[in-house]
Amino acid sequence: MTDLVTRVAPPRETALRRAAPALLGYVAVRALGLLVLALWSAARGKSAYTLLTARWDALWYTRVAELGYGYEVRLPNGDVHSNLAFFPLLPWLERGLAAVSPLSYADAGFVVSLLASLAAAWGIFAVAEHLYGRRAGVCAVLLWAVLPVGIVQSMAYSESLFTALAAWSLYAVLTGRWPAAGALAALAGLTRPVGLAVVAAVWAAAAVSFVRERSAADTRAGECTPAPPGDGSTQRVGSIEGAPDVPRAPATAERALAVLLAPLGAAGYVLWVGHRTGRGPLGYLDVQAGWRNGFDGGLAFARFVAEKFTSFPSALAAAGIVLGVALVVWLYVVCVRQRQPLPLLVYAGVVTALALCASSYFGSKPRLLLPAFPLLLPLALALSRLRTSRSALVVGGVAVASAVYGAFWLNGSGPP
Image (cartoon, one colour):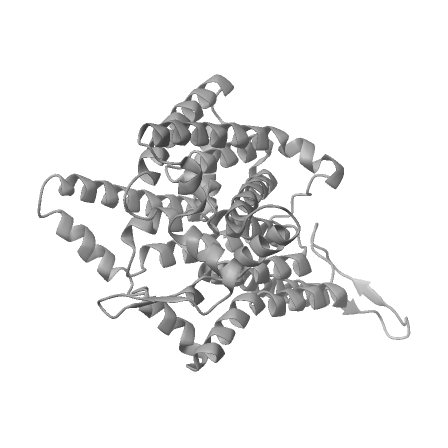
């Protein structure tokens, strides 16, 4: 299994130009989704903007931005919903933008989400182009845009912000920019609990890189034999074409810095919550338990699906869920078979496991899988091999279906 790909990244001065087709396509797909949402919501007497900025999690984020932490809701069944469950980076950005502009906190959240979604699209393009070329990069971005739950990318939620930080951190790992990878991983850890996936990816890449460098150093040492006595030199008896040089101290130090930086965001917030609640390092888990969130290996999700098979038409929904989970698992298997770099496999695996094996909010699982963009790379590679007319037809049809589904979904009764 390959780990780090050594393809040379395109020059910085051309990076935006190379990404332009992907970004323009992304904007077109998201504009279609917002237009359909506006028309659908108007027909139902609702405000599309309110649906995007002032419902469900968006309200919790804006409340943190406005009032800080400490707000909680006690439900009749004894559950306690605390805003400590929401990581701070998005509220910080909302507060900062509102402070320097006439925007409200909700408006600021919407703007941050839009900008972050563009940054995420660019990051996904950068990763896919680095691995498979420009055409595959464009296809990867478009596939991410047309996901059935793609409308979340335009909501004042943290998914777009997290995906942007994760994608660029992974790109930094793939291109050997270790300090940037660690810093971005730390910021991702301040955005969502699944930031642990980015930390794991950076650590895995660093470990493999270290082992490879040590192996290369040992190999090079073995290729040199002492020269005849009195010569005062060494003689090289063999060489491996393309073998890396002995690791330099600066490279090793940068990698170590990334390893140290990566967990600081998530660990810092979790420890702060534990201190604030007086419950120690596990305090954040207690906060999540108040929301009935936990990790049970997928048992509760399996029971939820099984119960739906007991009646009709809910059995149809259950069958759709099973097919969806099977598709996600199959895509991950394909990623492994196609020998994606180890950091992407670790990241996508952790995101997928945390999404599918959480014990609550089953309707939110498609949204929780949104950051797992490496799962789309096999589809992007296949789509890139089609003729342009055919790939455009496929993307266009799916974009229309996604826009309609997103409008229907967001106008529903439950949180996405």
